[in-house]
Image 1 (cartoon, rainbow, N blue to C red):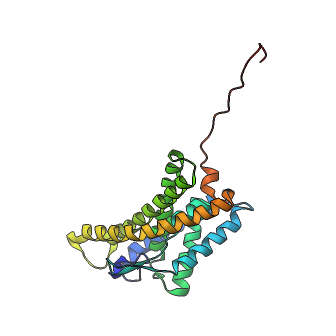
Image 2 (cartoon, one colour):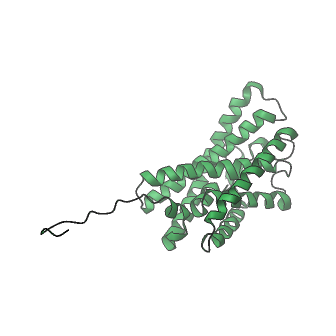
Image 3 (cartoon, rainbow, N blue to C red):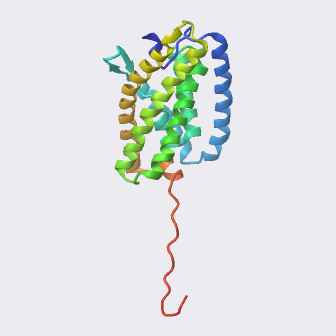
Length: 239
C-alpha cells in the first residue's frame, strides 16, 4: 500500500529513472514559465498566488479511502488549470510540491521530478485538454461548468496515478513481473475514488469563484466559443 501514495517516497523508483524525470520536469517547467509569462497580468498574477496557497492548504486535508486502506487529498491540477490556465497552473502545483517535499517531507526530494511530472504536468495537462473540450460542447451554465470541473478533476487524478505506474515499470525497485497490470488496476480504482472527492472540491470552488467574479476563471475567458456577428437587416432599399 505504500506504493499507492501519489507523493512518491525515496527508494521506490531507482536513481537513473528519477534523474531522467527530474530533467524532463525541469525542461517542462521552464517551458511553462516562458508560456505563462504571456498570460500573467494584473488579474492573473495575484490569482496564481491564491490558487497555490489554496492547493497547499487543501492538500493538508486527507480523506480516507476505506476500501483500500489509504487516504487521498486534492492534487489541484484541474483546479489550477481552470482558474489560472495550464501553464501557470502547472507552476502553481509544482511550487506546492517543492515546498511539501523540502519542508514537510511529503514525497522524497530525490523523487521530486517524478512527483512534479505526475501531479503538476500530467494532471494539469489532462485536465486542461478535457476542459477545452467540454467547455465547447456543454452549455455555458452553472451545471455545465460544474460537470466540466468535476470530470476534468476526476480524469486528471487517474491519469496522474497511471504516470506512477509507467515510472514504476521503468525503474521500480521491486520486480512486480506480471503483476504490473494489477498495480495499474489498483491505482486506477483507488484514484477514481480520490478523484470523486477532488471533483467535488474542484467543482464547488470553481462555481464559487465564477458566481462572484467570472472574469477570474481563466477557462471561461480563454475558451469562449466564437460567435458570428449578426447580419444587418435590409429594408426599404436602404443598405
